[in-house]
Amino acid sequence: MGEVTVHALNDISLEVVANQVTVILGASGCGKTTMLNMIGGIDSPSSGDIMVDNIPVHRLDQKMLSQYRQEKIGFIFQFFNLIPNLTARENIEFVLEYVMQHPVLNKTTQAQDLLEKVGLGQRGEHFPYQLSGGEQQRVSIARALAKKPKILLADEPTGELDYRTGLQILDLLSSFALEGRAVLIVTHNREIAKIAHRIIYLRDGKVLRIEENKKPMQASELVW
Image (tube, rainbow, N blue to C red; front, top):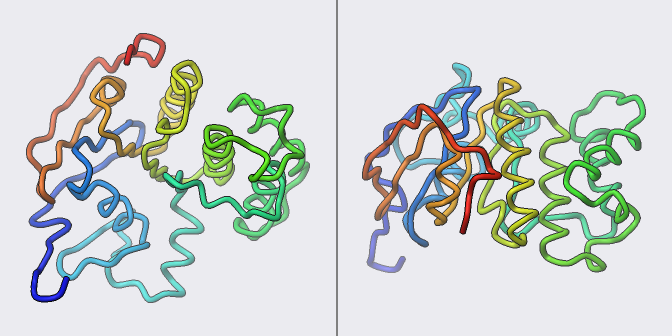
């Protein structure tokens, strides 16, 4: 930034495994979202290696990065990134039909089932501008789950949700991890970290410490 060099992430070294929820915890500006973007192939590191299923993500060109994101990664963005001229259901169908690039039987039924799981079964025909921030967030979560990605990257997934809906979504993400996926949740909420198998504490772009949690709590046990 001008004459100032900002190291968003510096000397990071960690491993994330399937069948687990990993929470990246830290204050705003500590590098949490940058870490997700690096793993997801949105940002590229100036140095270092990012390996996913033996794929050197840091070496992929734009075409191969697109394929990597399509096949391996599901994003739950903090600012939703829904397609504005598609309904909630169509946003999910778009992923099922076009992003996955193979025929999907009963894509409308699958999309509706996902909307039901996030508590929006009656809102499928509404456009994003007709939905609240929390409802848009839930559509983005359903859309990410539709791909059944090996790695699910969630940037503050409960930030726009009320308490009860937030617990429902966290329970859904925990269940998704147990299906053989790696779920990474970025948050500044220490209470959410209690559902994680592993907690990565970030400060000023560096890993402060990593904690293992052998007995993660159920989402229904959380209070914040």
